[in-house]
Image (cartoon, rainbow, N blue to C red; front, top):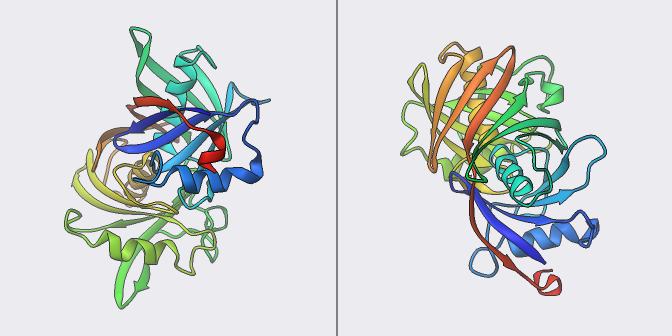
Length: 280
């Protein structure tokens, strides 16, 4: 079983071409749990699998280290696009990738035959509670949420996956590891939620730390960066173009005609192989 180890701003993934379906669906969750273990296996924030698609150039499936499947991943899809381009799965600078959150349009920036940066049309943010999902009706914008006696103002939305955005005065020393899992698993969120803790540096710059559902705090989260800008825009604290500083680096987010475009790097760390039986 051949794989690539990749990352987008330190948010790292293992990518495997499973177009031949050698890995059966029932075995994928256990594979993700095993192969994503740091020190005991390859180690990663997630497992990405390549499948054939009837509606796009390729299909991406995303599995968290706990074996759960995610709908969409912003850093992951950039790595996925680079993998497909450089392995001749889709040798196009503009491609379409099928995800559980729909078909995403992707444009790769190629230098010397290698993909350096990727721009993804992430679609329009969804604020309707039922579609995120969040319990209740209407929108959840600037609402109060009590967590262990601490009250937060939360804004919830979907970027193909669920997010809860919280603006704080100082994010660097904020106890993300304490409040992140409590909010992720709060009863308000029937399918759990990704949590962004956001500090406004300027109208065109945010600093963000992300607690990812099923993963923990990560160095970067593409959908989380998009969600932070979308929440900031609806609250009136940022403009249409914004640089998002994450622990692993920067992403550039732009609103155009009601849709969010995300641009950032994708990096191949190394390639390798595992015996499938050993990995499961």
